[in-house]
Image (cartoon, rainbow, N blue to C red; front, top):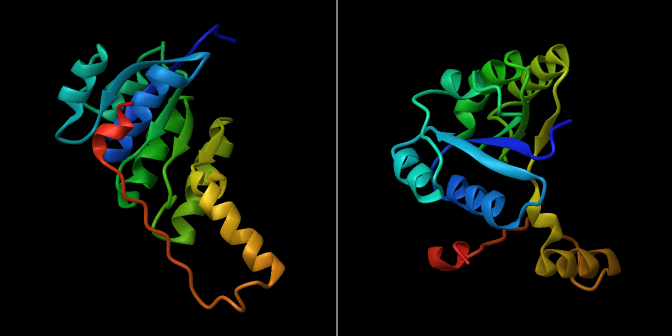
Length: 161
């Protein structure tokens, strides 16, 4: 096993920016190798001192990439997962995993056939406010829940810190 996992970032929007920053600044045992996807990929790659790949295929052809984070719109993830898994790379995909259960099942199948791991991000469950809301629900303190919606608002500059 590699001393440090090489990570490819697919997607350059808000979550691509967030995950790239986290890999670079906070993740021990992993390093960012390259970025592809979206109109901001070049600038984001330059900011982190890594190359911007022209395509998913070019990225997964890199032997130094062990896994990819997929932070694209969910409508694109089935095709991306098929390519990444076929290249033998592990995947972490942003939520929602895909638009339909059938596509999620296909993504799981691609990864099982290729013998790679597939994870889906669900960071919300670890947030303090979410855990407090769950405790209040479990205690019956706020009555039956018919629907819940959460909103997160913070300045983009905060993600760089």
